[in-house]
Length: 111
Image 1 (spheres, rainbow, N blue to C red):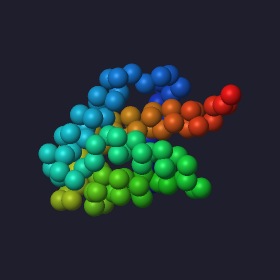
Image 2 (image 1 turned 90 degrees about the vertical axis):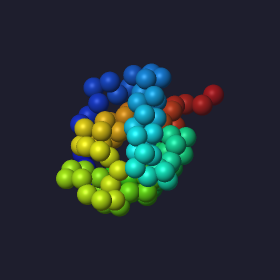
Image 3 (image 1 turned 120 degrees about the vertical axis):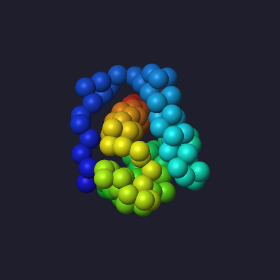
Image 4 (image 1 turned 30 degrees about the vertical axis):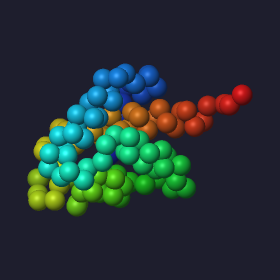
């Protein structure tokens, strides 16, 4: 399982720039494979992953969500989408921030 560095801004509301960054990464990945989904699909997958009975490691969900082969870290091999480790880590950091938002929203009291 790949660990992601804890986000020092966790708990702060996401900005439109975060969503734009995720969209830009996905757009770039789509240049390598037109089957890479849009963020709206990924958002649904993220919500489903948050609601599972057990934590699902990145190595398990990422290939399914993005349609990649093996976990796409360096060294880059055929069948991976991310152009470099920096983009991969940025995607996972943004994903983790959004995941924290979704978890917090699901745990918020409803009146």
